[in-house]
Length: 571
Ligand code: ISL
Image (cartoon, rainbow, N blue to C red; front, top):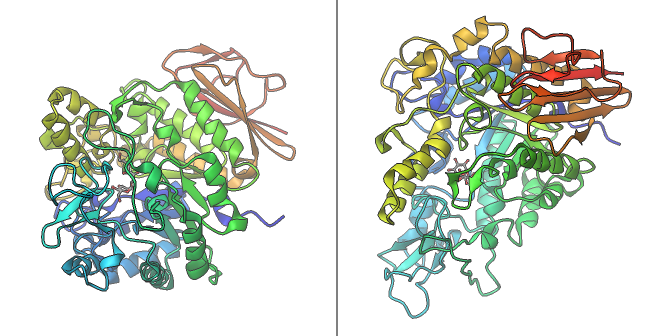
């Protein structure tokens, strides 16, 4: 067949600019801060940097609400600075991927301002405008066109008083959904994407891209969804996740934007709710849609019946079953992306590991080893390579994220116990991932000389880049070795995957094989010592990488220490 795509042995590093590094003392990270820390990324060895949105934006959802796709928000810098950053990234042999947020715009985007100006506006149809429910007064309770609940609490519909019509917003009221049924919308988006590619960017991470096709029958009618317990709302996801035209739209985008370019680009579609079967279609190269998708199955395994703010403990067998199924499902066609963290998820060392001083480094490196030895393209989220933890938020005033603040307001108004709601936010809130990157043990962790927009985690005195870079057995150096391994051992990138002992609740074991090279990955995902005999033929084999400085002769004692992970190699 064809040579494997360049991104099969690449590692991507995600920057959330607001929280990465501040260069001008306003307390908010910016492009100057990114430029100042490129050495750190080059030392880590990553191939690609994905920048969360830096476009002009009112920052209602930290930049995922865009009011100008072709300018940089003054908070982050200027287009000139962006060009400088892009050149610096390229000069270091890395690539730069932009966040593409085109399911919705900001309500302050000129397209929406024009659309809202009148029902007769030529851009009215660029968004989803609907009359009140039949026979009901605009604004009356229950008069929303459908019962859908927003991702950020409340209805997905906001009434525009002037016209008496509602507009759809799956996320905040300031994030109206674009109407992809309208060919002008699609053409405008493709032109904008081409503008960035012409400028030299190397691809896109596509925000909630499986939500752009809504299931509106021929008459444009949208349907109610099943009720969501404890709310007046319904779950509309059947009408907007992987809707009827999603593959058509992505194929068209590929044709219009990517097909005629011969640069080495990368596309990854963020797709909440996507199944393995759907992902096979999205990532089959023959269909020309996207290179890979972010799936959400493994980050939902510790959600209780009440959703993400209703936590329950993870069962390792569930995690293995899920990731194993994705490995198998995308073995023949398509490709996996691999991640524990991003700007929407709590920190993995606090979530699936153990962030106590005793276990933090071992559990962070154990989880890293597991993820990076799967088949797929790994994504490292800023601070993950330092073993950064969740934050000690106390009161609701400590939170900044619109999702958390809205959830608190709605839940408490509906009668929930505020302490219980806060406990859920502390566990799952997105702000856990958004506290400033901890560069040094000094003031504000070296993030800013001003007042940080969200509090720095006090554990920066111990957990920081300066300390991690100086300590050979740190989380940072372990990540660096894992990235290097992917570049030097073809079996890590391309080998097939076989899960072993799927029913064991503490150990995670699998093999990878490419021609005559075979790897055995063995990890104790618990804080207790466990018995783990090496499978036949593995005794005495070379240990490629392990996460314990005091590694004993591999496997000879038949024990794995707490959070121990090892990769054996044989030929
Ligand atoms: O964390 C979530 C809310 O519970 C996710 O469902 C999240 O909203 C979903 O992954 C979509 O995320 C993306 O689009 C959002 C933005 O807020 C997120 O930061 C972004 O990653 C809207 O643009």
